[in-house]
Length: 408
Image (cartoon, rainbow, N blue to C red):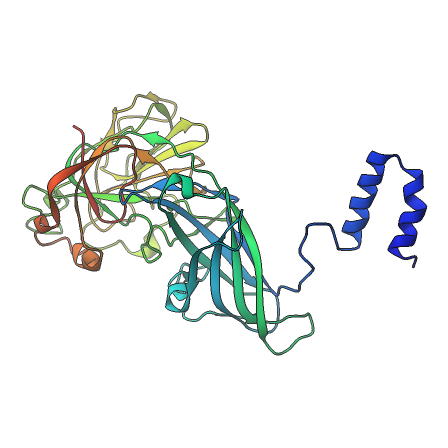
C-alpha cells in the first residue's frame, strides 16, 4: 500500500485549495488520525448520556441542579470494575466539578430494572445506569457542556484476559439553562414535596421506563404533593379512609394556558395506606385518573391520581392558567391521596422529564431528610419542621421534602 505522504503528493497537485482541504480531512479520517482528536484507545466500557442535553434548574436551596443519566456498557469478556466517574468542565477538562467514587458511586449505580447495583463490577454485555445530579452555585458557573472521565479496571485490548487500569474521557452532554416558568398546580398552605428531586434513592428520580423501544426518565423532576393541616398532620383517624387525608379533594389547577391531550376519569380509589398489588398495575392505569396538558414548545404537564369522576376537562379542550382540572385523589399506583405532578417533553410517559420553575410560592419548612421514611408512615405532628417565618420565592423549583404555601 502506498504511504500517506505518497498519496498526498499525487492528490494535492490535482486539487484546488478548497478541495485539498476536503481531501486532507477525508484522508486523516481514513487513517484514524484526524487533527485535534485524541489518539485511538481501546475502551472496553462504553459510556454515553441518555439525553443529549440537561437543563439546570434553580432549586429552593439557591443552587442550579443539572439532572441526567449516563449509560455504561461493558463490551469485553473481562469483567470491568468502575473506580470513579469524574465530572469535568467541557470548556476546561482540567477543572473537576464532581467525583463519584466508593459508596458515593455505588449509590448512583442502577441496573436496567431500576434496582441498586450491589457492586461496581460490570460483566460482559451488562449495562449500568449512573444517576447524576450536579449543583452549581450560580448561573454564571454553569459551563456550556460537561465531560466525564471514567477510571476503571477492564480490558485494554480485544484479546486481553486480565483487567488493567483504564482512564479516558467520554459522554459529553450540553447544559441548556432554559427552563419553563409555570404557575402552581395547587393552592393553599402546607404542601409537602415528597418523592421529589434530586436524591438518587428517591423513587421518581431513580425510575427509568422502557417504553416503545427506549428508556425514558419521565419522572426526573416529578413531585408528589401531600398537604399538612394547621396542626402539622398529614391525616387523622383511620388511615384506610381516603377522606381522612388533609389534601384529599383539593382542587388541581392548570399551571399554564394549554390544550388537553389526554384524560382518564373512571378508575376507583385505592385503599390507603398501602400500594396496590403490582400485578394489577400497567401503563394504562398506573397514573390513575389523570390529565395531560400540551403547553406548547414540546412541553407537557401531567397530573395523576385524581378522584373518580372529578376531571372537568376532555381531550381537545383549551384551558386557562388557574382553571380547575379535577380533584386530588388516590387512584392508580398510589399508597395515599396525593397529586403526582411532572413536566415532560412528550404527550405520554414515554418521554423525558423536564425541569420547571414555579413563579410564586413561600417556603415554610423542610422535613429533615433523615426522617423521610417516618413521614411516609402518614402519622405524627410535623409542625416542628416549619420555619418561624415564610420565605417568599420567585421562579424556583421545590426540592425533596420542602414544605410550601401556594397562592390562593
